[in-house]
Structures are given as structure tokens and as C-alpha cells.
Length: 246
Ligand SMILES: [Fe+2]
Image (tube, rainbow, N blue to C red):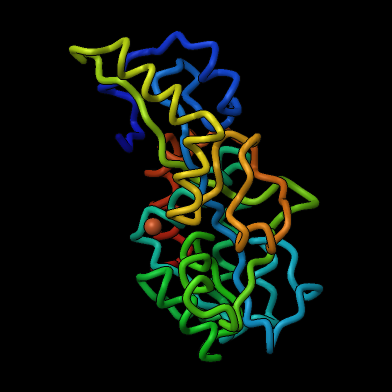
């Protein structure tokens, strides 16, 4: 049911879904609604970095992080989405100078969020960017894993989030029942089942989060509509290329 482009799914008229899923986490034309949310934020080695040293995605370009930063390759959609939503908000020039700052710090490029976390824990780098649920998974097995999330951009635009969402295909045979299922999945009782198994955040803010995630505190999400990640993906890829971010 994961979807994104919204091309093959038809608009859903459901007051319940509109109430349960915040506006930035659903399609403006109501073709898809987020069910779970993953934050993509700064991860740091708790033995080597103090949270006071961290602030924003942009500040990872500060020379103090030279040779200390691990990033996912730009060919992967996760950082493409981060750049795309930032382009939507700030325009290309500002985002390109951020990426040039990252590149100037000689980041270690690793094409796996889990391996980025392992590299941070092993001290091969001190900070990185990953999705939160990867850390949740690791901490469930090893509560002493020395990595913690820092909520990026809390004094500015909020932490970047991405979603898994659901829609109903334009030619669905059982449209009414499909909508009922999505409505059910958006209620706190069903949301809780999701978030307790995959360490994601619930799309419905009235759902308690997993106890491991609760220890990370609450954070302000970037409330730009997640659809902008698709809208500006091509621009993000070109921008990364121009800035020398492989
Ligand atoms: Fe993932």
C-alpha cells in the first residue's frame, strides 16, 4: 500500500482520515494519507559529541565536523527527499551551499542507514543522518548502543519527516471497504500496532509512541507537505551532482 506519486490512486472523501492525519502528511487532493512517519535527523556518538554542539542540517557543514561525518550516498532516496523538501522551502541556492559544506567536510559515504549507525558507534565518524526507526531497532537489541538522535532544526523549520502512506487505486473493486480499512489503520488502536512493531512514529498524533522513542522526547516536524519530496526529487539529484555530493 506504500505509495507516493499518487498517479494511480483516486481521491478519498473521508472526514475521519482528514481528522486523523495531519495536513502535511497527506495529499492535497486526498489521494493518499500517511500511516507512519519516520524522522530523518542527526545521529551522534554519545561518548564523543555533546548535544549542545549540534543544531541544524546546515551546521553539519561547519568545519568542526571535518572527517567526522557519515552520510548516505546521494543516489539514495532518503537524502534526496531531505534535499527536495529543503529546496521547496529555501530554494536551490541555500540548499546547494549546505551540501557544499557537507562535501567540504569529506564525509564518509555509506549506503546503509544501519551501517551509518554502526560506524558512529564504532567511532569511525561522530555524526550522521539516518531515519529514526533504524536506531529504534538497534536499541531494542542493545540498550547501551552509544548513539542518540538530535532533533535537527528545532529553532527553524523542524526535523525532516517522510512517510509510509495508503491510498485506493482508481479501479479498486471494493472501494468502500478499502477506505474503511485505511480509516481503521489511522485510528490510535491500529496505529499503535504499527509503531510497536516497526519503531516508526504514528501519523495520528493522538497515538502513544513506542517506549524507546518516548525516551527521545518530542520534536517539531518540518510541516512542509511530504509531497514536495517527489516534486523536487529531480532538482535534488542535480543539485547534489553540482555540489560534488556523490
Ligand atoms: Fe528504510
